[in-house]
Length: 152
Image 1 (cartoon, rainbow, N blue to C red):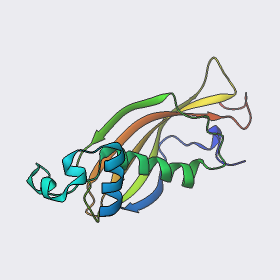
Image 2 (cartoon, rainbow, N blue to C red; image 1 turned 90 degrees about the vertical axis):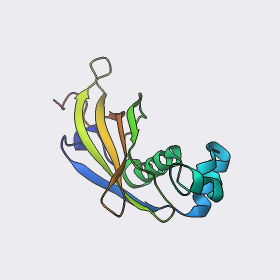
Image 3 (cartoon, rainbow, N blue to C red; image 1 turned 180 degrees about the horizontal axis):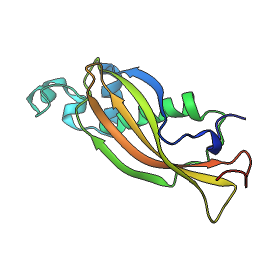
Image 4 (spheres, helix red, strand yellow; image 1 turned 45 degrees about the vertical axis):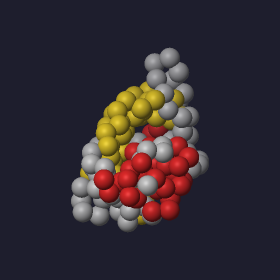
């Protein structure tokens, strides 16, 4: 069995992976899911407040989620999430940017109504190659307990 509720340590920060954004993937994602001009058209993007092509915030979050699932949650007792509490896109993600993604455990508790699982509050962050935080996501995840009744 992989990661379970008991393995989550409040205050811990885990690097979940890195990703470099390419022009082609920014445009392809945006054409399908967020076709705003500054995501799909380089000429229009230059004239935008961003001054150039930028990734959709939704693409950034999708990539973070993919890294989290492949590098942390695979084989875990994850039962999904009751939702996202907060997303902040703090700086644009540009062609060639490499983001390092981390996941911090903020809080955790065993569910009062379903004591075989716990609720874990986390904050994901994406930091670019310049050390700038470009995105933060606060969410909760549900994780099965390895030993129900043993966790405090």
